[in-house]
Length: 22
Image (tube, rainbow, N blue to C red; front, side):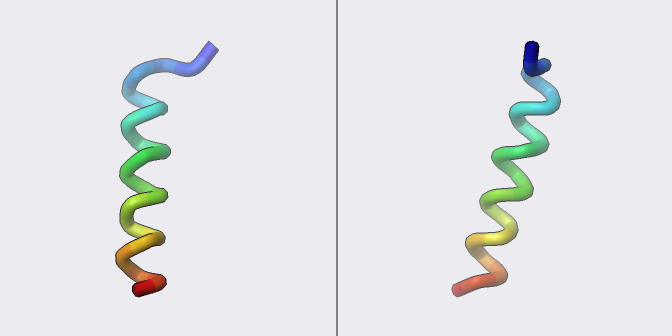
């Protein structure tokens, strides 16, 4: 079971990774 807060944290991490890769 994934908490909403955890899901948001994961999305944020992915978003930051995309920004760093650009």
